[in-house]
Amino acid sequence: QVHLVESGGGLVQPGGSLTLSCAASGSIRSINTMAWYRQAPGKQRELVALISSGASTNYADFVKGRFTISRDNAKNTAYLQMNSLKPEDTAVYYCNAAGWFPYRYSEVWGQGTQVAVSS
Image 1 (cartoon, helix red, strand yellow):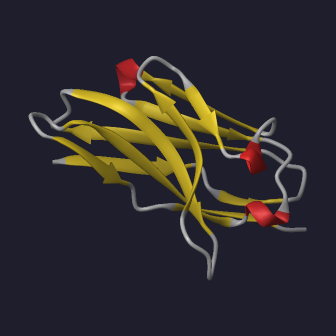
Image 2 (image 1 turned 180 degrees about the vertical axis):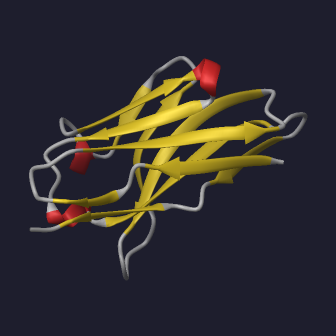
Image 3 (image 1 turned 45 degrees about the vertical axis):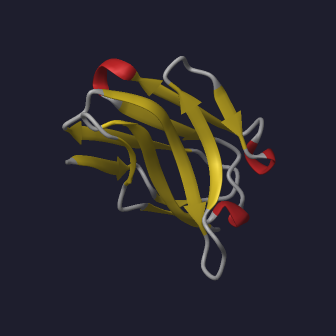
């Protein structure tokens, strides 16, 4: 089994910053993509940012220029640096990883971490 553990969420004022971390552990042969999604109350879960094993990245338009995704392949860990946070960024942020775990290609989700942006 593979587990993802997110950390770094919390309450921050508008314009502030937070860094989320997602650590993968368990029966991992290789991780292809790692991604961050978010889900606000009453809304569907949406992709925030994705990074491939080769460090190619994709961002949702609503975070371009404000958020940065990165990963440390040696630690099986992904990060999401969030700057210039807005109240509309308030949501539960979920980490997702897709890869060979270890002999079947599948994806796993973390339990989520709450981010609240409010004055």
